[in-house]
Length: 296
Image (tube, rainbow, N blue to C red):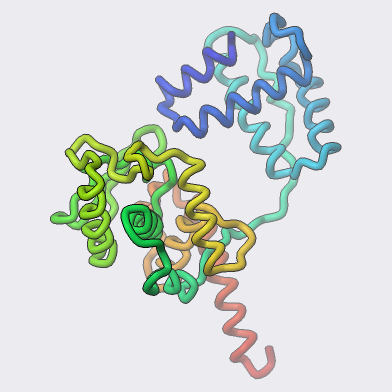
């Protein structure tokens, strides 16, 4: 019951994305089931203890889960504990003495500029509606750095080619405007023409990007498409919509954009979240240094 109340709180009050809510719910149910087994009627105050959390962490570690993944699950428990204390369901915070796992700093992976250019070659995408939709989708990620949840929730009225901008709704429904370039506007016009030929809804309140059946996009559909196309041009380990977000930020920084501007374009709440991209830029500088300096 408490978990259900918490997920509703996330949806209605925190305005968290459905992806975030599902992740939290999955983590909390896994923890509860590990401690309680089939006894679903046990209250949180009984099973949610620091001892049980440490026991679960040990089990996750023994089963090969990475420290980074364990920390993500701990974040879910911490958010849940804060909620329970806030609504008076628990007197003390069982997560107060739980420390996160140590992790090595992982730089964001990104696609090289020349690899992204391979995706603009003729016949890279299939013909017809699906091909124009996929090209527009990939290029929209690359042109704006928006998140997956932001892309699938864009409506026609939000995309404004005449003003050269698109309105997106980020985390906690925070609105921001992303500028558009000529290339993405041209891809939009080609896609729109194909969408009209399919007889799909192009009214102001209709979803901008849709499936082959004209329905709203969903996470797995977009992941599958992006993974496929990135796999055609790059050998990096991780291939996902978020990699295109990293690519946008890294290449903007490499080409002279200041960090504060990138922060605003990405919709980050603080500059610290954006500063991770400076590490990629420094790695590039080190490579140039080694190649150019006579004593390197």
